[in-house]
Image 1: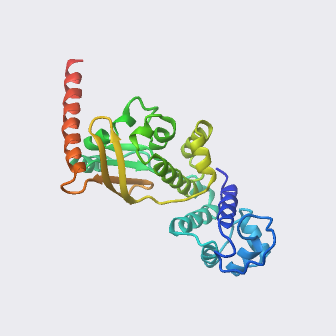
Image 2: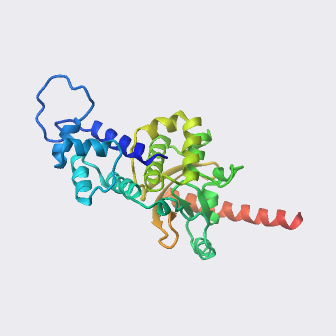
Image 3: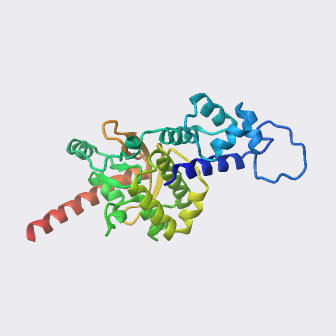
Length: 291
């Protein structure tokens, strides 16, 4: 992905979202030729010259200082995730060619797999491309439809946008789809030279209108904790809380663990899932012994 184009499109889209009223500027009336703020208004709010801001919005972040990025973030009223995205874009723009070619980890160490297996809750290891690189038994059972004839490594973005079962599996499909694209957009800012990520974005853009519309919005979101509703084909409806934790020794990987509220119907459903998962595991072991 072209880092210059990413910077240009991100800054333009954030500027278009703000009105003079949002920015505390007087609206002098008359027809405005652009959506949102003008470039000269953003420059004034950022404390830089118009020419310098135009340079930034054209995608040239070479040599930009942290203080300018902070001022620009305030002027565009970026939230925490958007601010981090801007910093990531600047970091990549100023990185050496060697640093740009670095790719995230794509394998799960045996010690991490053992940690997963020791957990009594559904848990998965994912990367920024939304690949599910490893699970424990409950994690695989929770996302069972994703493991039915996957094209390579199970990927939640491919499942969400290319598998028609996903809209039944996720009752809150629209919100989840938007969050997923916003997360991929953030990853693209951190790793624009990741070929597997570029290929994934290209595939989804080609095959899914839902994805294309969301990708064009340039929204960024860090979905690190919250609730997720699932309509599971075996246990029915379940609502789980989740927490995502970065694996600091494995660049780009995070562990996501799920749980249910105590004494809730979802806790009962989770127990049923564990029972079903154990049955499936025993069945696979029996099949392996007889083949």
